[in-house]
Length: 154
Image 1 (spheres, rainbow, N blue to C red):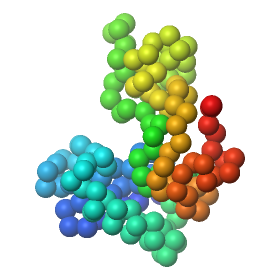
Image 2: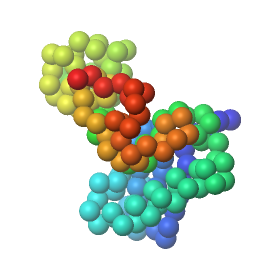
Image 3: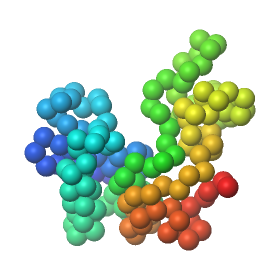
């Protein structure tokens, strides 16, 4: 099987990376690992240490995650979808992953709540992501450094 995520841990804090938004868990504050502390002011120092450690480990130990996933965010991307249920008014239960399937893409254009909830899936975010990301096994500090590899609707 191909690996789909990697994790670095220091004490009671874990950083999990994959092709999606990175997750930072604090096992003491959230033992069920439900809450993402990636934006927590109180976790900035440990987050930076874990980000550095996991980036180094991916290359030093040749962890195969980078072989199978071409883009990995180490920092939270600016344009990301929320993971909870979409704010639909018709009683339908769906998430951003359903955009273009059971939820028509046109609803992004017509309903700002859906467009703001699903920035990535609705293609409604044009901001550059600043922060560490791995693309095709190379480390970049922002989307602008990708020199044409990043699709940005301006």
